Length: 122
Length: 322
Image (cartoon, rainbow over the protein chains, first blue to last red):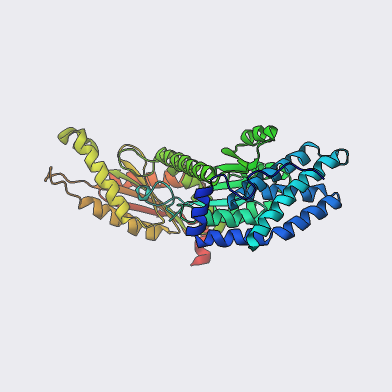
């Protein structure tokens, strides 16, 4: 299975601003912990949707991550989710024909998500 | 649709903070925006579904709506936008669409349907924040201009156009609920003489002072307006003819007691005509105004500086309530 190297996976684009928000704002730190704590469940749901070829559920999951990951300090996850959502919407109705591409998009996204979640367990 | 009785109390309904309704099916977005915008000068109301969104838009009257277009499907988000823009109670509320940037077809549709702005996901929170602020600013300016168009420039009272519109509404409401209703017309006595003897600037001062006296006597629920040159009107909801006449008399006295330090000998008096009813099945709205106007001229003929009032409660209803 090949996927693009996740550049800058864990570091938000505006790293300093975000880290300072994290340290200065306990609410935000709590929110990030919550977001990461939900990650295994999210990854499981995404993988199950792919396995079941449930494209609607997969699109919804990707759309949610697209909107929320960046705000929690994980823009790379947001970008990967956006790329997956765009692919699903573009190829709606012919998902089976582009299954390998969708699979690799999902793989790329879930690996980033798992890394983020593992990072939180340290 | 209740406007304040005293227009100069504020251009828009004064709330502590403007309220932003977020319609998005992702709970994590709600959590995130609530925390990241907790110090901003707007409050967030949350809806996780389209149905909840339309319900809260109607019930809470937000100042701005953030709507995720993919909720969970683009067609559903756009359908909700159409509903919000077609519904009179929400059509003035600006809507910022949140969605995937790739679907430019949907952007075009969203703007055609009346969206105020479009923010692509993933969005930078700083960008979303300034777009929210910009949309709230525009909303406030539009509301101010809309209200200014309903005010009399000299006295700050509601103008005739606004009065006519509210009169129809209040009349319909009183008919529907069987509530009493009263309308009073006021005309300054010998106002032409004031202008002739003291000049128009003093005449304007008199009009402004009368407007203030009128507002001071009116209750919160009354609606005072400048009806014409030196003519004023007061709409008194939930007020019967007898109570309306009492209020009209108080207004008459207040006007007669007005003084102007720069013109010590100047006095103003006014004549008032009142028409009120205690029950539904009363005449159509225009006939009330005619009756109040007839009473106003009866007061003039009887020597001015007085109130003439008529109870136009239909005889059948009057007998029932007697």
